[in-house]
Amino acid sequence: MSRRWPRVSRNEGIAAAIGLLALIACLLLGLHAPREVLLSYLFAWLFWLAPALGSVGLLMIHALTGGDWGLAMRPALFAASRRLLLMALLLLPVLVGVAVLFPWAGAQAAADPGLDAQRWWLNAPFFVVRAVIVFGLWLWLARGMRRRLATPAAGRFAAAGLVLYALTVSVAAIDWVVSLVPRWHSTVFGILLGTAQLLSAAALAVWLSVSGRDPASGWWTPRRLNDLGSILMVLVLAWGYLAFMDYLTVWIADLPSETVWYLPRVKTGWRWLGAFLLLFHLALPFAVLLSRQAKQRVAWLAGLALWLFLAQIGYVAWLVLPGLREHALAWSDPLALIGIGGLWWLGFGAQRRAALEVQA
Amino acid sequence: MSAPREQGWLARFDDANALLLAVRELRALGYTQLEAYAPYPVEGLAEALGPVRNRIPLLVLLGGLFGGFGTLWLEWYASVVDYPIDVGGRPDASWPAFVPAALEMTILFAALFGIAGMLFANGLPRLNHPLFGVPRFDAASRDGFFVWLRADDPRFDVHQSHADLARLAPLAIDEVGP
Image (cartoon, rainbow over the protein chains, first blue to last red):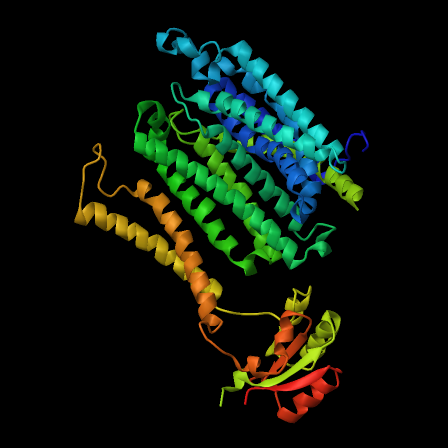
């Protein structure tokens, strides 16, 4: 595979320029309200991390299971997994602003003896070290997977890689999301975030691979489309199941250390976002994907995949935002989403075409 | 006297390929009510026989809905109307806790409705079928490859259909039904 810089199309260049402008606007807003804007940034960054990191997970799963679905999505997954380096660089503002953003690093927490027990893990230097290690491992996994895909060693690498993947995603989830809420803990959260990332990556890859502009669109038989629909179905159900199980156990146990996360989500206006996710991120895609006719029609499948990808914005907002600032939404939310998203697509098309040619 | 859907012509062919070709020929002639019998699964035969539309998926959906909502109702009735117990101050109608059981019952009832519906749609239980009256039809489980042209096919005509089958050079053509 060539190491040249990927060619950037005109649209990608425009998107990146708009993205840069949006990020500059974020920076200006951040001078007034650094914490609010950093929170928006973390939310947007987590949303765009999902398709990049989830793609690595899907590539590893496919190396173990095989199947047409993975071959169909591979070019898009390849290109998406190449965004990891960019996402690592874009984490920098969060690392710089760790004392502003995370309550455990703030001045209030330093005086709280109740938090002493967790200080060996939650301190700013170790936080940065963990971020570096986790991204180092992910980049190594992504690179190793892309190189080994067609070789017999792919299976072994993927098996060990998935174990590492599950552990590192848990560490990342606890660092970047769970630690936002002091004294909250959840044992399922790492897997839940990992599943949501797989879903996001699969939805984006299905949409890109199936939609009509793809040069390989003649390759799509009803059976292959059906497989892709089933993959989306599995991930929607796995995500819905884990999210509900987390809620159910918290609801039954009713312990303060667990309900502290749900209270701002179900006792304020954010509950409407919860209802929206339940209806339109779980029930509606489930109902559509039950139908074989819908799964085997390109327009329906592509539309649903795009919808699932966009609905993840709502889910990541649900994970990060509620209860942490006075106003539910801020101008910096869309700006950060557009900003990181604009940069995300830089060179994507050329990298995907390169992966298509290798496959053909 | 049995119904037209249990009558017709049964042709025996040499091997799986001949059977597959015959089915394709007959489909091309416009026959739709075809049945094929072979001692082992023949690749492509199911597709060659044409699309099968049946109501099993609908039945599975109804079974799932019945099982799911039925269980939710049962749980609500038991813990709110019939025998309310205060468990740690939680509401009688503990909807989150009702969901797992309802989910399991959804799957169970969907499967049961599907299987029962499949057996019923296949005409089971029954003890005999006119096909078994055809000599040597038992070869279908050893080395016989059969196509049955059912008499309820809109294109079926006793003489014309016999001629259509004969042109495909079968080993034998037998009449099904009395």
